[in-house]
Amino acid sequence: MPHNYFDETSDENLAVVTVIGADKPGIVAGITAVLAKHNVNIVDIAQTVVRGIFSMIMIVDLSTGNIDLPRLREELVSRGKELGVEVSVNHIAVFKAMQRV
Amino acid sequence: MFAPEEIGEIVEMLLFQDLDIRSVTLGLSIQDCASNNALDFIGCVENKLRGFANSLVKAVEKVSNKYGVKIVTKRIALTPISILLEGFAKKSIEKAVEAGIEFAKTVDKVALSAGIDYVGGYSAFVHKGITPGDFVVLESFPKALAITQTIASMINVASTYTGINVDAINIVSRKIIELANNTPKGIGCARFTVMANAPEDNPFIPGAYHGLGEPEAVVNVAVSGPGVIEAVVRRLGEKADMRTLHDYVKRAAFKITRLGELIGREVAREIGAQFGIVDLSVAPSPKIGDSVAKILEAMGVEVAGAPGSIAALYILVDAVKKGGAMATSSIGGLSGAFIPVSEDWEMNRAAMLGAITIDRLEAMMSVCNTGIDMVAIPGDTPPETIAALILDVMAIAIALDKALGVRIIPVPNSKPGDVVDFGGLLGSAVVMNIPRFSSKRFVERGGLVPPPIKRLDKG
Image 1 (spheres, helix red, strand yellow):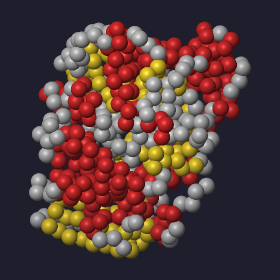
Image 2 (spheres, rainbow over the protein chains, first blue to last red; image 1 turned 90 degrees about the vertical axis):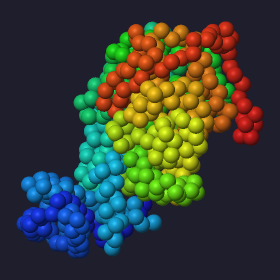
Image 3 (spheres, helix red, strand yellow; image 1 turned 45 degrees about the horizontal axis):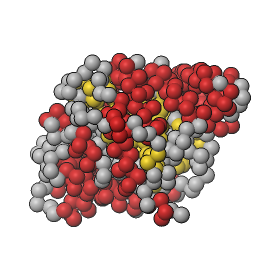
């Protein structure tokens, strides 16, 4: 079996959560409540509002949590729908593969 | 770890620019199923295929879910069936045809129940001569495709090593018409291609098959990212010069290819198969925003096919190959850009405007590796004219030493200008005007066109 160089690090449990949408109160609380409920730790967070467009990027660690990535995505996307924002959840390997040589 | 811009760029590609994995194709050898008994042979293929099809579907879903990347189609490519029919054909052509049809039905049933979109390998290699097994495939592919939904067929009729088999082309062109007449709107022809220099690791249907030099089971990947490249070109604006344009396309191709490699390796690991290749092709789909023709237009030609389109396509293909080559060492397949007419909504629009014609496609194929792909032609086009069209494409392929194909659909009862909707990923196509001048006396000479002098460079 060929060696898989994408798996060498300890990032196996990290995912990137992005949230985009029209700004209004309660977005951060709504999204992070889902993470807290499943004991998923936020490793890094950046958030901006430009001309009323809210955008947030979080790097989260699923190793302490009680949920796998596909189910977390499902819950976050459906919470996003309730809040009227677009949520995407991707494994960190995608970003590593595409942005790092 | 990552700058917000870096994350934003990737999320934008995945969410808004239709970046996805167009296909994961499992190449699977069925040579071990060779038998003198048709029931044993088909039973063996059925068992082997069922196991691999189920684990492929499971693996693709798991990997797609884990990474949050859409994988559009799941495919399997089998050992060319002509080889396995050889023994039956020697005894009786009729019996071998029956075995071939039964094989197609069985494979189709397994694929449909497992959730596999296409199975390639109802194929034969006749670029220098036709064996009894090859003949059975030539004879039976129209029926095998007409009565199934997933089976795809490819006949390789030319190679730089051997030249062009005109006799085979003459048979194939008649069979294409038979297939068109036996499927609604001629849609069965979407699962059939004639090729020159067919690569063994090609993940694109209908050209996909499992070559003799391949391992037992291997995962090949094709990426789709025209939307991403179009966005890059548009963002760059009109002031950027050609070298800058090329460089930005190259960078985008690098990123797209890396995604393909990540997904391909993961699927291969899940199945326990070897990882094969990433096909560096930029391939369109009928979705708006997923068009190769739009990239050419973003570069500055008013409509695809306009003067300058060949240069624009050359820049795209060259940059994609250079960016892709840097991104993965596992290169293969057809690697370039695809401009199928019906599957690329902007190509089809350009064809309706008259900017894309058969002549224009023939010129464009000198810099890409599409050939004439998903082109609808009038149903009353004579078989000799279809043969002559195929012969033209094959000649370019061997003269330039590259892989090219012809996937042409003679739509029954249609005339030039009619629009035919094939549905789903196949899109819709305007029926193209075909020159009415005859080539009958030329193609009926038959025989072999000798290989080009390039052959001698190869030893």
